[in-house]
Length: 105
Image (cartoon, rainbow, N blue to C red; front, side):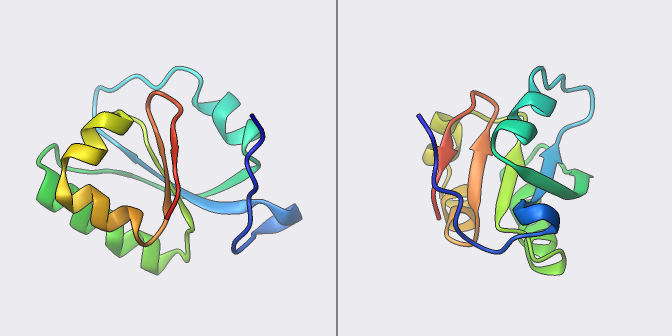
């Protein structure tokens, strides 16, 4: 199902995205996901595993890099919905999860 990608854009009309990862985490299909959703990755950060510091690092980089999409390659949509801090992050930017779900801000 196509997704309407409105919001701030980077080069060639692509949406600015940051990737939040965890060390030693494989992200199969990440390149395809970036291409399919027309994202321009402007920053990648490896965040702590604990939700609070990871969410704070994410907010910092959303603001610093003017990103409107966050790819969280190590969490599923269910895990994000279950954690209040990640729901707050979703208020700032769209989130694309490890299972390919797109959570709108």
